[in-house]
Length: 147
Image (cartoon, rainbow, N blue to C red; front, side, top):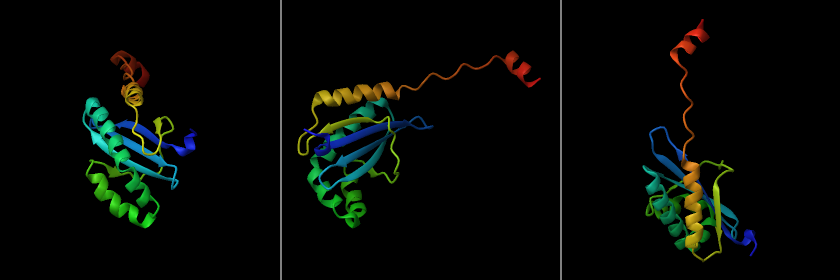
């Protein structure tokens, strides 16, 4: 089926300076043509993967309710906060979303296949590995550079 009739889920993980991870999810619903952005924080990569799966399952189980509320913009923030807090999610007010986010799609009303979730986790794992810190310069080299 065409991707414009499927729900699109975009996931990105941002490491914070405190050693935690902020996970942002962007769900694009084709029917009312609107986007829901949520986020949560996790302390470990294992917790990130577990919560991403749980958040996706929750968003899919509440899909019909979210579609209904998504059609009326005035109800969104009031009702979403209550529903999303049950799953430990918060509304994300930021408009920008990284182009390099991991994307997966699913038909409305269908659950995401386990193979697709496994692929999502694999891609997130490779993107979560931080690049190695650059090697520090020896003290002698620093002394020469300042002279």
